Image 1 (tube, rainbow, N blue to C red):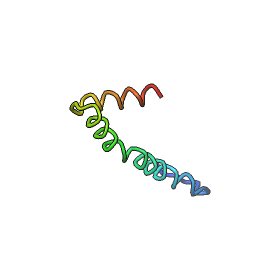
Image 2 (cartoon, rainbow, N blue to C red):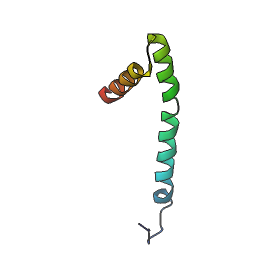
Image 3 (cartoon, helix red, strand yellow):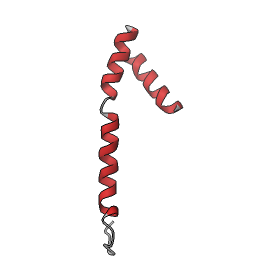
Length: 58
């Protein structure tokens, strides 16, 4: 979809900024899951389950 009005830079910048902010938030997820797995002494399946359950209940 192309913009023909062109009177706002926000429409051009916001989607990319939102995408990069989402990546920044999600960047620590693998480390968090690994630490949970080490703490529980189990494989990654339990850590993945707890992470998904925690995020979906938030």
